[in-house]
Image (tube, rainbow, N blue to C red; front, side, top):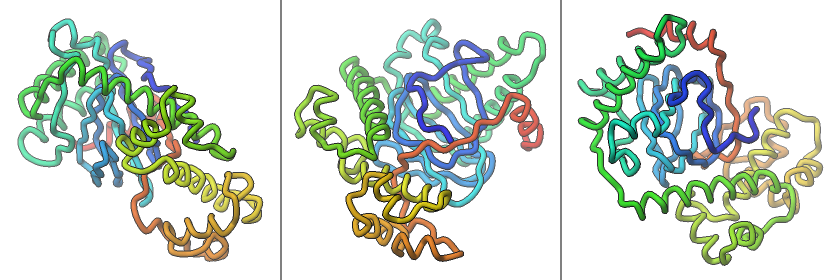
Length: 307
C-alpha cells in the first residue's frame, strides 16, 4: 500500500515521459504539473475531477490537464490502467503557448479519433517498454503525434496567466492539506489547524476545500478516518473500540453512524457478516492503494493487449 506519493512526478526512463501500468484501488485527491493520459486495460474505475465523476470501463481513455485536482476509486474488483504523464518541458520548445494549454474533453470512448488515439498510445507504450535502439526517439515521435491529435480533436483552449497561476497554487495547496490530514487524522485536528498550515482564515480554508473537493473539511476528515477504520476491520483483530481510538473517532456510535450511511450496516455487523456489503455510494477516495507493475511485467501485459 502506498500511503503517500510525491506531488512532482518522477520521470525515470525518459526525461519528459513516464509510462506505467498500475492496478488502482484508490488514489486520494492530488494535482501535478504533468498532463496525464490513461487507458483502462481491464476492469473499471471512477475518476473524480473538479467535482465531476466519470465511471470508466475497459477501453476508455481519460485525460487530465496540468494542475487539475483529481482522484481515482475502484470498489468493484481488479483493474489495470495504462498511464502516461507528460512533462511540459517536452513540448514547450516546439509549441510556445503550451504553458497555458488546456483541453476541455476528458473521456474518449468511441469514434475515429478515439481509435487513432488508442493506437498511438499502445504503440508509444510498447516502444517505451522495449529495449530497441533509439526507442526514446521513437517514443518522442509518437508523443508529438499524440499531442497533435489532442490539439486537433480534444477542444483545446488557452487559459490566462492568472488562471494558470491560480490552478497551480490550488493544486499545491490541496496536496499539502490532504497530506496533513492523512498524517494527523488519528489526532484531534480542526479547520483551524488547516488555516494555520496555509496562513489563511478558517473561512477561506473551508471555502477552498469545499470548492476543490466538493465536500467539507469535516466530511473529508471523516472519509479518511472511515477508510482507515474499514482497513483495520478487514485486516486486523482489533476491537471496535480500539479501532475508534486508532483512527481518531470519538466514539463507536459515531463510527457506526458512518458505517450505516456508507455500508448500510453497523461496524460490528460488518465485522460479523461473511458476505461483506459494498459502499452504497461512490465516496471521494482518500487513501492511496495501488500496485505498479515492473518494467518487465508491463512489457508482457502490453503484448497481450489487442491492437
